[in-house]
Length: 132
Image 1 (cartoon, rainbow, N blue to C red):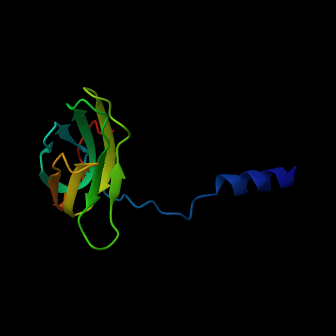
Image 2: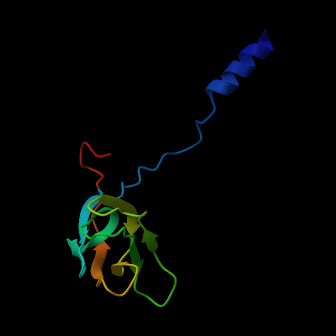
């Protein structure tokens, strides 16, 4: 019986030596819209601060398209790609973009790509209510 009391005390005392740091939350995600037509990819807004985004793309062409977002640097950096987006349909890409200049393009040279300018990190969403 005394062994049971010692075991119960040991279990209750677990975790007492740790400390919890209240790190700031990341910035709130923003929605970035893009559309593909037969001439170009258009993105809005094309300038925002670094942090999480959801890119929503609408395909206004007559063919299936895939959108690639990649940082324009000589070194290895971010590169993300949507799945195939059927004609007159939408697709999305979720990403946490660091500061930099990005190209948003589809395969093939006939449709001109767009450019994203990602600046300094957006502020933390620490004190914002109703965040996901």
